[in-house]
Image: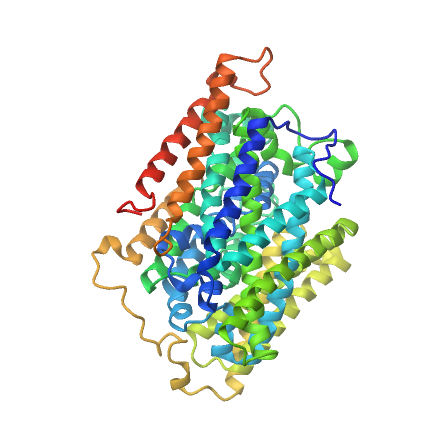
Length: 566
Length: 74
């Protein structure tokens, strides 16, 4: 029997009756949407691809929302407190160029090929071995990541609200399981758009009131310079060397490791987010969706980074790392967002803020579960186990896989509860696949000479190189000077450079093996590779309705923002 | 995006904002009428829950009316 709402004395905030009413209403609404949409998920195309009828706005907001998890919100707010405005790079150069690249360069190939998934594209372009490698690793890591996030979220609910961990895990994950199993991807997408609005409604008040209290942006910068350092409020000017900024990284790692590889890998090949775009109703919507997502992504730092910076200026206590906070009984960096929430939000607003955190968690989990379900059914079960099932059979498989995926996630959450170090390993494991996968997919789309064996070995050895570098630094921490090119590099710099090297290994191996093996005939590559594919026109539209125009607008704002906060 | 013959996604969002707006504004007005002796939040005098709740309420109401089932824009 699950213990209900047991409280511990360490909770940060006290909810009132109206706060509980808002949270309960949220759960009722998302479940209601799932039940309402259950009749619209009868075919495989409906269940796994939402009927491919989403508008650009719905697909774009869902694309962004699937990434806007609660841990993302709290983690990066904590990073902003710890590292200052440098954390914004993960929202700007670490996202916007990749989203625009997805929209204008890669999306046409995903869309024209009518693939159901990223591993599905690899099957069409490189053959079954590449798909199997990608699908199995993705499915495995997705449910593990879902479980890790679930545990972390439950832990946050325990610290912030005093809720029992078992209660948080079971209620939130079963709710996600029910609405995704009932309505499939359409239900996940509907709820993600709802969650997007709730996240903004619940979190936007913190920077508004925070800036009021701090006396505006200029005064905030002065206060941060006094309490921490002037380095905390500059985006680029401190990145000349590893030692002149709080993050221990340099501009090369940010531009090439984060901007050119990690973010490209995540935003263009992680099926968790790409699946939302594949549900778009036509090619224009598929191209506009990431652009709309990028437009909103640029402003997410207002509700994530700004609260962290405000925390530096206005919170009376000093926040520390997790381990110090646990042993000394202090608050950690990751507590900054809940602390700011508690600082400004009274009855009602507190409930909305907590709902925003829960919504963030659930949108991220629904993204994981629906992506896992599709990859399992289309890329593992159908090609490797049962290729002769009916459409109805695969829909049922999708529903049951949703349930099983949720249960595996719950199991992982309990595993993490017993062995906390698993969390670090799983998060590291996930990053191993992203950079090499981007190398494989982008070469497949842009270079017709890339062959099946080239794609497979590039992906495999790129991933192996990433794992090797990680293990090397784990065994011998001084190896960081070689992996990240400096003895002064810190952990985040390792991630950037590890991704860059594994991407290069993947590309080099793919090129060498491809040149040594027989190329596919051009006719077999039509619709999959640039130069052999006729990209359909978005139609005879005025310039202001064309994706290229809006990508240009987003790019200009992106450049201006970077200059303003230089 | 509209479910065929059914309810627009924007209507669901309108419902959510409307109900939250009503609850938050209501809680805020109650606090104005019965102010606590020792407010637990900073900037209590701004009564953020009154005006923020009202903003959500108005936006939610507009969405509900604009995208109500049967409305021409839904």
